[in-house]
Image (cartoon, rainbow, N blue to C red; front, top):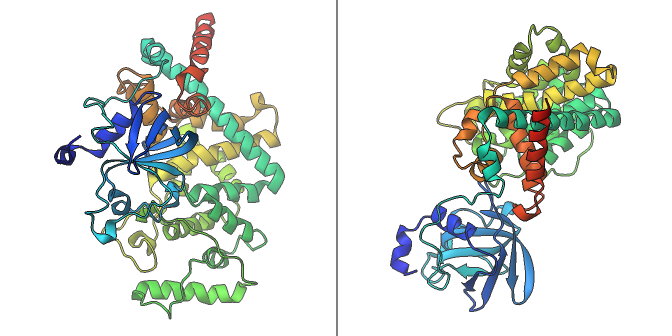
Length: 455
């Protein structure tokens, strides 16, 4: 592939081309050796390395790990991967052009342990490779009607819901009702990369007085370790006032110093920063008076229908903060203020965390689900919830399972069917490493078809 033509090559093209490489295909390494592809990996449509769990052969050894694709070698530094630990598992860097010698010093990547493969003339990447490869189950899925697909995924969605409620029940038995519920909520606010950090904060707060909102706000900020010294930073007046007030309260209740919590920021959008999530959390904890399960049970009792319960829970988790709507951290203001926790994320927490937790509590209080009004209300609320925001899994599934991926937009009409797509993909496609030959998904589809025919 001539260097001049690489200017017209997009990274998306290279990704699609890599995905079409067959077992045994090879590319030249920058060192002069060769890498043979055993399995190209799972195409990651979300943040992080482009392909996950690839299997390669280098120097006669089988190497497993992630693959990152770029047009130029210097794109590694240009895209900020050097300080992003999501890329720690990368075992091969594939580029169209190796510009190590000509790139500016600031963009010369430091990749001493990551082999570099050149997808140039020796690589012979196909010119037409923009189609996501379909799975062997695609003909089966594509032959089903929208109604049949929706029924299949709704059934799988219910299974995923029961698994989540079962996990919540286990936590309740281990930690008690309210602390377990707080842990689930803190975990959800941790988003993708800071779940463990938020759980640590929650555990540190266990013995404190949750019904005192001022003390709890100060304790959350204080235990997080994110609270800066207002005298050491040049803070804006409103942020200096906020920080000083929190410190005054925190010094009164602080006990002993705790180990530093590791917060992950690489690859996290500024609007999802730990500071903004903590600010939202303090508001939600205050709304729930420190007892989230009791509050949600009361909310369910006041909801006149399953849809109203979903709305009430979503409203509970939607947060506007008078200060933090306009900041991403203690020193960086935003151009356009936005809710620290918007309705889209709040709906996800309501469906994926709150409803399973309430169902778990209802099952513990009354094991007879057929005569359990609360459990039935929650299950109906789950089925009535509108679809959530699309993610990597739903996009990947549509491309892999359906000849016309847009059909998935008609199939997914609610959160239950959407959760079913995620459940099926996680249970079958991911364990098989996207290797269709090892996947039991066709058996599931056949079994569902037989069951539908019987009914």
